[in-house]
Image (cartoon, rainbow, N blue to C red; front, side, top):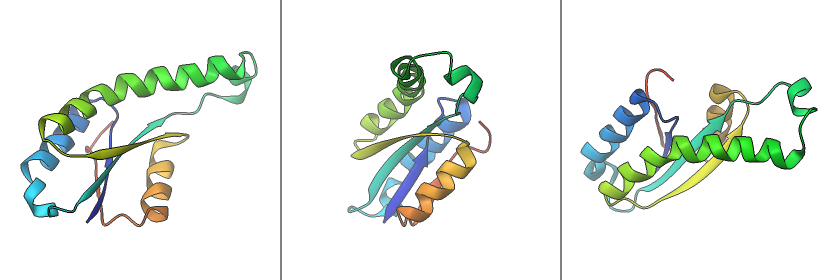
Length: 112
């Protein structure tokens, strides 16, 4: 089973990881987990005022902050995973990745 988990660092995201941990056996021993974090894209006028490096660092800082609890949850559950960083509209980016990656299940919080 190929499972995509959306992480945004919120309490709702934490509940999604709790769900994965509690139901890990349901996914099977060969389950593959991918955690995706989507950073909302900065408006073009803002991006134009900063260097490409500064903009990338902005997204990476948000990514690292949002991924910290996700990484801790997966480590506590003893589950291997890969990570994906996307920039754009979270709903659109998660849906595109879910379709492109042919995931069997998407796990996400109800808000965030």
